[in-house]
Every structure is written in structure tokens, then in C-alpha cells.
Length: 292
Image (cartoon, rainbow, N blue to C red; front, side, top):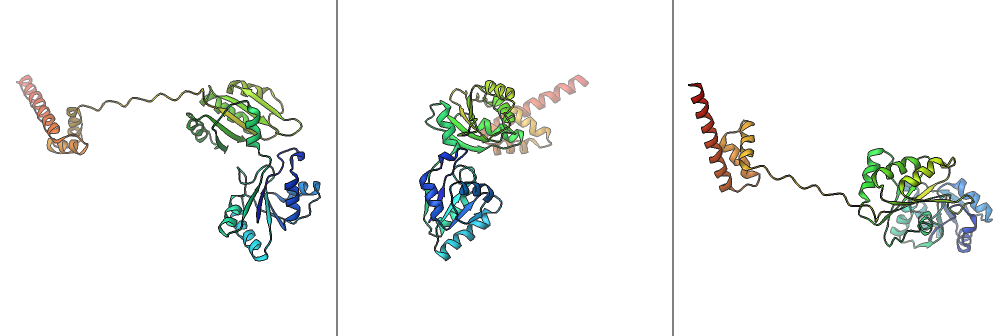
């Protein structure tokens, strides 16, 4: 059995008795960072062996751990540094490897920043999309924010070092949104800022400790208007399109064939070509008369 065990996101008092019991009982704990998990296991007097399984090695390590569980007939637990594994954190590959090998996978629920931030936001969202961490580069970030328009809400994770840059982008792209920005959830100095993007941005700028602690943002997007659809430009008259082809060096016949290839009906293209021919002939006659 593989147990996917949620661990505290800040307050050790949130560790469930079931999670402690399972971490003591299994034969192996796969941890995102063994140094971080060792502090947790030491606090709860857990002496189960640890092995690393993080974003840089989990594709290779997951298969080896799953095979070890089968070969030795042992149970294992999966944990991350904080919160629920495989949600914007490592763990997916190990879960998949175990499932594909027929090893049962069992959830041991507990703390998660996403649910905690939603619960204190005050937003009555019946639907939301979890995005995790957004792109770091300016244009991909703004494109992702614009793609959220038309949805009810969004949950975003952000580093304290990029939170102001993110809020600046939200203020530019989604100024009508409502924001609940939570930091240091469950810890001593837990803080949640609520308001418009400009209000939350200003509060962050005035907070000397803004660049400390991970952030989880909830966006209420129900008041953000949909972008106005641009009306498609009316198609150019067939005669102008024929003249355009003629200017490219095509003969009138070749221009007419190109026009039908564009989807214009043959009889319409033929009639347009006659009108163009009359126009060109008239222009030539007028030019000859002017030169006489």
C-alpha cells in the first residue's frame, strides 16, 4: 500500500493522529526533502527510514520505490515539505507507478493551502480553477491571466519574492476582480489581504514583511467583463480582389481562377472579371484619348 499523507503547512498541531500512526507503521517514507521531513518525524517521534523523491529525481526514483515495495512486500508513505502531495508538489509519478503496478494507493487527507485560502476568502465560489504557480515571464503571465476571464474564480500559488509583480499584472489585466491573498497560513503571523487588485497591491507595497512566507491567492472573477468581440472586416468586393491579383502579375484568367479558389462562385467571379475588363478597357481608351 502507498499512503499519500498530507502534512502541516505551518502549524504542527494540524498533523492528524492517523497521519502520525501511518508514518510510524510504514517501512519507508518517500519525502520531497528528507531534511524538512526529518524535523517533522523527530517532533512526532517517528523513526521510519526516509528516501528522497523530489521534482528533479522522481521520474527515475518513483519506479525504483514502487519496485522495492513489490519485491519486499512493504508499505510506504509519500509526503512533501508541506501540505498534500501531488497538488502543485511532487508525488504524481510515484502514485502513477504504484497504480500501474497494482499497488493500492490510499489518501490520508489533511492540510492544503488551496482549501485553507478558499475557506478564509469570503468568496462564494461554487466553481474555481486551481492554477498553482503561474508563468514567470511577463507575456506568458499576462496571457494566462487573460485566459481566466469568463470563469468564476481562480486559486494561485506565488513566491513571496514575486508576489508584488504578480499583483501588478493582475491589477493591469483583471482590475475588476476581487482578491484574497493569504500568507503564512496556519502560522503565528498568518495574514489575509482582501479587496480589489489595486487595494491588495498597495497593502503589499506598504508591508515591510511582504516578501516573507508563501502566498495563496483566490481571485473572484465574476465581475470581470468579457472582452468585446471584434467584428470581422467585411470581405473586399470581388472586383478589388481581382485587381489585387492583377497587380501581383497574374492574367485576368489566372486572377479569376484564384478568386474561385478563394471560395467565390464561378458565375460571380466571371461577372466580376467582365466588369474589371470593361473598367480596364475604359481606362486604356481614356488614356489614349488624353494623349491624342
